[in-house]
View 1 (cartoon, rainbow, N blue to C red):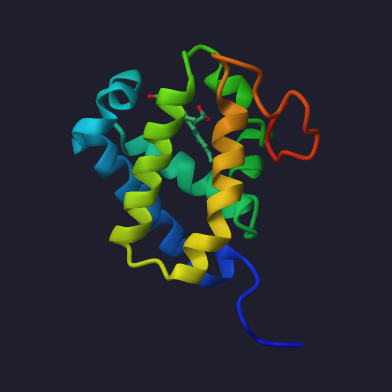
View 2 (tube, rainbow, N blue to C red):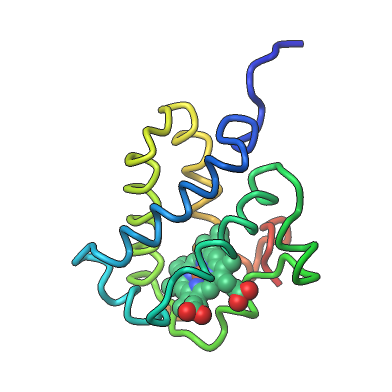
Length: 143
Ligand code: HEM
């Protein structure tokens, strides 16, 4: 069996995931193309930076920090109050692409995350066509 990292968590570690999430919201805060997405969030992003890091730590294969604190991994419910269509989804994914670049993520990691990130962001989408969560029971964190 090879010693090569098998999960994004093994590649980034918990500190790397936290750095990614802080960078993600800093990019959202300043990128003109993400202005609609930024406007949906509260003025202070500090709490949500840590929430996303807790969430992604478990989602990327590490300890389930978010589930331990909040008792769920469901992401559709907390997003229900917001209008999330393809535009909002794509702005979220753009910020995540740029954050991965900014933390110098390897091509291997970017490739590993591309499809799962699209799937979870599209599962959270709740406007303009059925979410992929509607017909794919295997999407993590939907429902
Ligand atoms: C698809 C586009 C998305 C949009 C437009 C969006 C938007 C939002 C908004 C407006 C909030 C509330 C922020 C606040 O309270 O100030 C939020 C919370 C959150 N989002 Fe997203 N989000 C998206 C995708 C995602 C994805 C893909 C993840 C995880 C991989 C995620 C993880 C979270 C977490 C962990 C919270 C905090 C939930 C809680 O209150 O416990 N979001 N999001």
